[in-house]
Length: 245
Image (cartoon, rainbow, N blue to C red):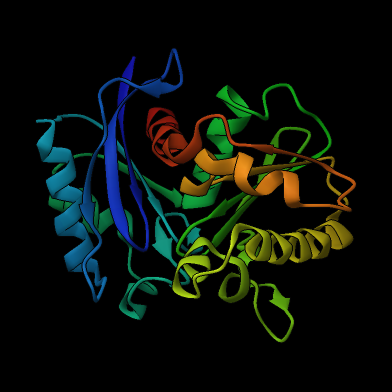
């Protein structure tokens, strides 16, 4: 069964039909740049462009980089603050003329990885962490999601962790893989101290280059693996949410 998923990020809005029997994209994804400022109307235009690129008609799942309760946006760290208290389900559903489901972006990626990727069959405490414009987090306990953890905003060295160790920071500060891996290690040490997970799954676009930095991370007791669905996990998880209504 194919269902459409859209992943809204701080830099790009990407989507595709998803084959939920395989847990993979049914067609190559289409991506547009996230507008700046990333206002509700501007982002909605991007979502509509992505969905209409495929001529899609039917339910759509959509991720958002912030806390989502029901379909209402509660935080907006890497998009325009005018999103806060916006009913994204109502806005995007009206614009698309379709039923939509909205959830936190890292939660969507985590749900997909637990069903089809590196978290399959894993019990205990598992974290998926996405490194991109910010740092997203999805926490699972015996396979059950604890939603909206947003642990990229933990304080690390006097700053929000994502201002210290995101992929965007690596690019902006032109950090070497070794230097950036050391920052990621410090962040993982902090999360491990708080939650004692058995497994860290590292997602986001940088997961495609896991061999360049994961071997440099030392002293973490939990197993650390790259996301198997890589940067498509959010799209797959969004589609899963839409299929469940």
